[in-house]
Image (cartoon, rainbow, N blue to C red):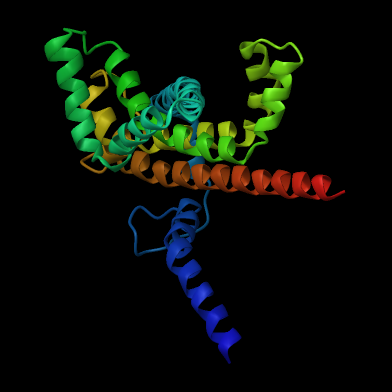
Length: 265
């Protein structure tokens, strides 16, 4: 009876989490224009999604931005984690504390701050992507730091010391010994940064150029009066994003299991 109750609780939680997404997937394959009435099967939403220049430009721009922000955040977060890990205890504590503030801080506060800093103080033209990139990097970098730091704590530190004893310079030992051991944390941090950039709304709203939209800002604006076919095409876009994220997680888990199996062998 106890096992049955545990299984039932797990399935109820999964149903609560994924039922709305599955409903959205179903609606993306229909002719429905409103939630609540399901009409016949159709691929028109996907046709609209991939044939509307405005939507294609928005999607491509969002992913280019996310990849760029992910790369910059990964470099900064990884360097920060390595530097803090090998610093003195007081320095490491100060860096950890400073890293926690952007994580806990509300996105709207970060968005306002970057907007004021870049535009009002440094006089950066808002028509450029500089405020947007800086704002999203400041959001994503702390999460990369948090992904890399545990891997540094788990690695074998004697290998780094041995590399130095055998003649490696600190820089060569970094790229030959430390980086290979923390690759899973770096990849995890990059994927987290990529997801945060794609999902960000508040920082993007306050820092983006007026002529540029990310997926999140476009979706919010689309609910305020866009054409019906554009709104329903966004159902298809949401479905594709969900499928993409699910595939990435599935493949990552398979690689982790295969890596664990290889280590046991």
